[in-house]
Amino acid sequence: ETGVTQTPRHLVMGMTNKKSLKCEQHLGHNAMYWYKQSAKKPLELMFVYNFKEQTENNSVPSRFSPECPNSSHLFLHLHTLQPEDSALYLCASSQEGGRADGEQFFGPGTRLTVL
Amino acid sequence: DAKTTQPTSMDCAEGRAANLPCNHSTISGNEYVYWYRQIHSQGPQYIIHGLKNNETNEMASLIITEDRKSSTLILPHATLRDTAVYYCIVRATTDSWGKLQFGAGTQVVVTP
Image (tube, rainbow over the protein chains, first blue to last red):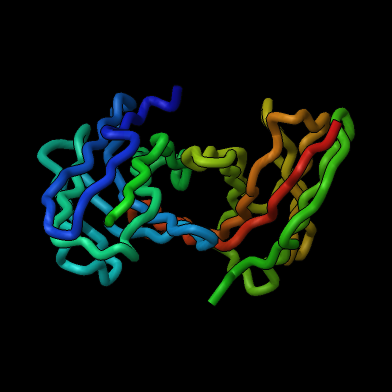
């Protein structure tokens, strides 16, 4: 148990649907992240939030919309996705600004399939 | 542009030590070496990190060469549960808010 939970674990959606992925961290960390992992490709950082403020957006299409209402919760809102967006979406958290910099704790991921 | 290079895959016998190499010849003085692993269909897991000195924890040991251009992750007694993709990552201490750049990693298969 890593202290980072993600729901749902699996999601199948059509291209016209709107859905949201949820991430919650129970570790008291100050930074949260969304990553995308497509088949046979390395993890790609999508968004970074620190203290609820977005500090990184790695040229992610606007059909992915993150939301961080507080330092423990992170959402990824999805709308009008494409089949190539099918991937494993991973959430992570970390405590930045101290000796443990760089130690990120990952959730189990949401396996997304877009039909 | 990858900052690290790792072998694509390697096999290891159960119970033996697994030595995973990583080259980071362009590493800067303020960059740490991090190791993560990812078991199939799970999120990555932090293993260890270091700057100059060798490091050891309950999971593994990290040996960094004196010139810091390469390092080796050592799993002292590999088990079947250590089968995973292992990522070697360099990250500057001045990088804001935990940006980690994952590469392709090394697929390690531990066999009975």
